[in-house]
Image (cartoon, rainbow, N blue to C red; front, top):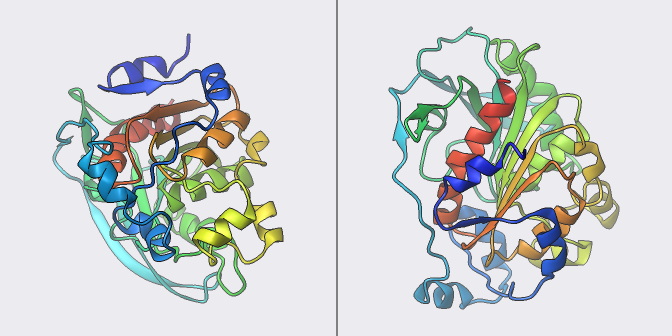
Amino acid sequence: MDPDISEERKAPRRTRWTRRQILTAGLGGLGGIVIAGAAGVELVSHGVLPGKQALNQLEGGCSVSSSQPQFAPLGHSVSGSFHSQARGRNVGYTIAWPPGAAPGTPLPLVVMLHGYGANHTNALTGMTPREAVALVIDGHPLPPMAMVTVDGGGGYWNPHPGDNPMEMVMSELIPLCQGMNLGRAPQKIGTMGISMGGYGALLFAEKYPGLIRAVAAISPAIWTSYGEAQAANPGAYASAADFAADNAITHTGALSNIPVRVASGNDDPFHPGVLALAQKLPRTSTVVLSQGCHTGPFFTSQEPPSLQFLGRHLTE
């Protein structure tokens, strides 16, 4: 029995496609481009189909059903900064503990990666890290786990000359958290992200499959070619060779032993890339395709089930 089916049945107006349905769906009807919030800055700034957002919103194409999130009493949170050798600058971070856990408590760790134009203070949409780990879903609190957010810049979490956010997370941020008993073996580490951060969450799992034990990507910013990436955001990759090295679609084989959840709106501009990704993901992956755009309402609706997915796999 597919362990993720029950999760999707709980969500109203959401369709969980089987792998076969995804493979046969093709790319028809994916022309809707909608941008809202920092995660969509790159598409607005480069003029990708301007005006389509307003049309889709007027027609209700971006409407997403979601309930008001419920939280248990919030736990502890700390924010700070450190000088990153990998990024060549100071970076800010926030660490949040779940309700009832004090700093020093051994816990699994979720590394939450922000979207383009965002930072550690607004990596999530509609909630803070403290609230995210205190979510109560259908009357049930999430399994205890901590969350960390960090400033990753606008380089799509892949290495650039003089700025390597991936190395910063792996060699600086995660050891910092492990020094606080977060994500230190036998406790597990998972990645999560929205838009640019969703791509980063998948990329980190592909590059470090021995360390990242589960991944949840919401509206991941996936391009199928270097030309597409350059047209939308010339700063996303330093070169065509870098795109090839860090193309999330072509390196999905590394995810064969990692639980993966990917969610995308049918009118998301990155949806064709997500469909191409879905064709390559391991058969055990959960792919959720539903009504929605690259906007805050879709991101917010997918945060609770994504955290529920990570909680299940990081604490089993």
